[in-house]
Length: 42
Image 1 (cartoon, one colour):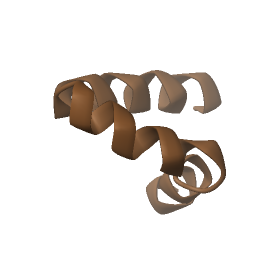
Image 2 (cartoon, rainbow, N blue to C red):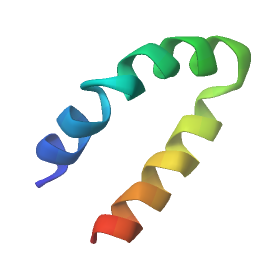
Image 3 (cartoon, rainbow, N blue to C red):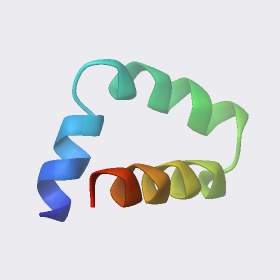
Image 4 (tube, helix red, strand yellow):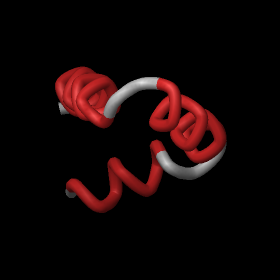
């Protein structure tokens, strides 16, 4: 389940925005966004 969600996010846009966002903002930001997505889909 988790792998599928991560793959979907890191596929089209997430991959490109992930690198830029992770470089500008700390990893905590990404963790929070991921939790929100999991809750929405969950």
